[in-house]
Image (cartoon, rainbow, N blue to C red; front, side, top):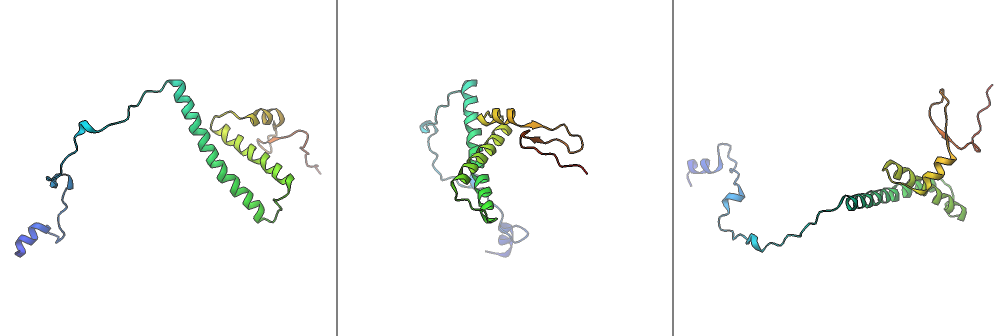
Length: 145
């Protein structure tokens, strides 16, 4: 091969030209498209679509919840707290349900804990401290000097 032929084949930069694989392969036998069986997709009703979307949201929340709770519990353990007592397990279950409720509410999914939270906790109207929720029976205001 002469240097001129080589330059034409490689291009001016000495790098071979790119070949479009879709047009250069003329010896490929195509599979008959009439033999391809595609699944028939039936259209979903609005109600079925809503149910499917709800299931997907719940699934996403539950996967996220598993990660968040495992990380949280591990952190409590790393901080030196005993997480093996039976009463701790009950507290953790309550915390997991509360986090699940938080994630459900953020995803517009109803949770049984929402009714309890909404009836138990009160929003503050304190302009100085800003918005926060509290349990009226547990909340103790700091004594002012």
